[in-house]
Length: 115
Length: 113
Image (cartoon, rainbow over all chains, first blue to last red):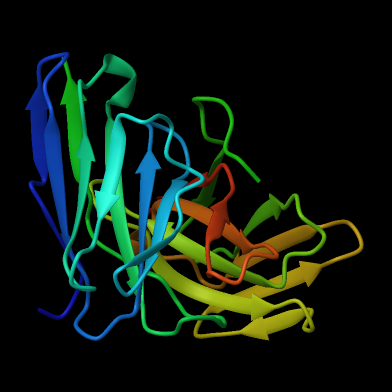
């Protein structure tokens, strides 16, 4: 595809359920980022991958959050035992360069609502 | 550079007027800055970027100004159009070499026809 693709676009989960959010980055993009965007706020960094290596996970809010990118392409963000405060839009972004001023291309996000 | 609060500042302008959106960034070591536009239900879309060794950069209808002395960034949109209505975020890249961006709070731009 031409852009970053995320699925599902909308997810409603009951408190305590596990969820998995998928990101298909732009083909060939080395860097992949996950951000969390709460209602009315800017995106907050969660984690970063360079190919399959997770080089920065400093933004993950708790050990219930886990991300992987096993083959250096598609990435999955998993949230275990969801809580109401996890309700947010989860944005995935990719960029071509490893370093430098590479523009981040964002997907349209996965909106998670935890009841 | 973390976003705070639930209510985004709002700028309301008349169609055809120029818009100026301001942003204060937090890290004096940041070397790269980007402005993003986010429409409802969509992901942020790149508008324009600037490196810290510059103080001004122009694009099509948009200009970014950087004042490192006071850690201030602004986005100027010329001849604002209804399609410019969106939330605008500034983002900074700090000392990390991962390219991680830290986003500001955001400003809602409303263009009145």
